[in-house]
Image (tube, rainbow, N blue to C red; front, side, top):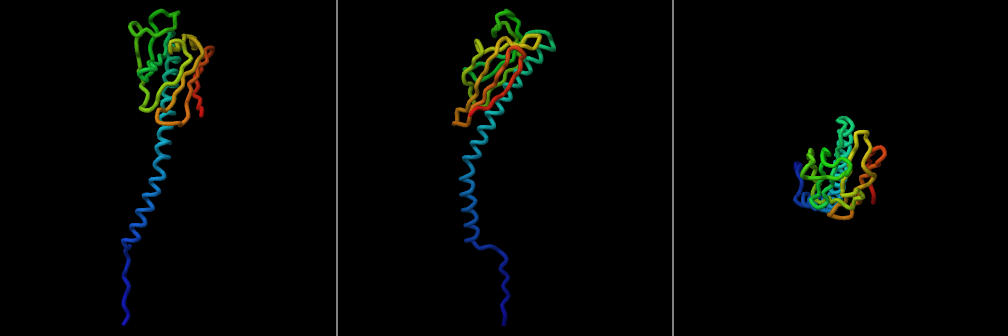
Length: 164
C-alpha cells in the first residue's frame, strides 16, 4: 500500500532560518539607511537655503526693492526679509525690517561658519548681492559631509556645493 505525501507547508526550522537571515540583513542595512537619511536631510536643508536666497533675489528684481536673507546661526533658521531700514548698511534689523519667510533647519543639521558680514546677504533691485560669501551646513549626527551655499555679489548667483 502506497502512502500519499501531502506535505505542502514549511517546517518551523525553515521559518526560523528565514527569520534569522532577515534579521541579520536588517541589522546590517539599518546603519546605512540612517546615514543615507541624514545625508538627505542635510542636502534638503541646503536646497531650502538656496531657495530662500533665490526667492530674495527674485523679489528684489521684480519689486525693485532690496530683499535679504539673515542666517540666525544660534537658532538654526534663515529669515527672508524686505530691507526697510538703512538701505546702504546692508544689515538685518529685526525691529524695522519686515520678515516674510522663516525657514528652520531640520533636526541634526546646523549652520557652520559664514563669510557674510553680520550673517546677512542683501539682494539689490538689479539682482546683484551686497557682497560675495558663503554659509556652511553640517550634520550634528556624524561625518556625512558638508554643504556650502555660495553667493556671487556681482550677479547674485547662488550655488550649492557638496564638500566631503
